[in-house]
Length: 366
Image (cartoon, rainbow, N blue to C red; front, side):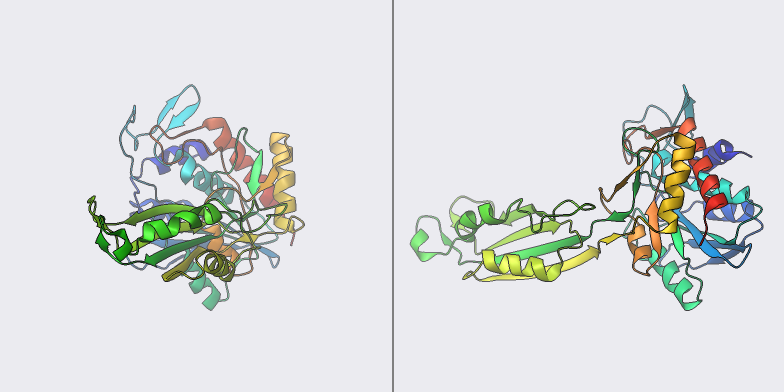
């Protein structure tokens, strides 16, 4: 079986979150020389495969086998991969069974390495990720089995295969603000306190405002309002409370305390409550680390292109890996149809990704 055969096989598993649909057992049997460990919780399956070749660096490939629901608008069966003019159509082609196929085949074809090679797969990345990679990493820490470096094979390229790797990700701070008022009759505004009127002059001070200036890796952390609602959908009653929801995709320059201080200044003198939660913390992997240097050179050799180092986009399971001090990067196929109808990638990209991973394994030094 080559990487494309493996890719097509993985695409045939209808592994909608959190169901792995048997794909993890298949991968375990395919990499029969690797030691398998499962940590399953909350209906989620997590698989860790490892093989020690020597005493050097421990490199882990990580990813997920689960996919989002297919949805409507497909021109073919989303779980029966279709190949047309060198393009493969199926749910999960980009996100991220191309990456899984590439690193599984690279591990399958490796017979020597100066250290340990491993694979971490979950069936719960597209969901809440509560019982996925996070749980497995906690287990690996307890067993003193955490890797030194990690490649997450999410789709990262933008216009051309090989043009971008992710060396970090922004964090995500979520906020719920409730602004108190006093409900009343619309005909007697002087007897009420309308929170909609209270927030009106504040919005221009907060909406879309940058909380920092960013840096070479991160765009500025922006205050993005996602929802505002108040009232009872009638025209003659002023609301007694307003609820505003917002999100800040934060760089390493902004944290929850900074957001709290920003809101406090903007709403000074008003009666409000604020709830903040952080679903992801920002991180960046130094470009001088061996894993970044090695995959840069591998991409240059295979693709004849120098990748840019990016932190753009949403979140991935790399955020959990980075919390353990592991040097983590992401590299995968072009990202332009993930979660969309007729999701697709090319045979050439998958084969090239496989070659990049093989080259990385062959040349990585601790």
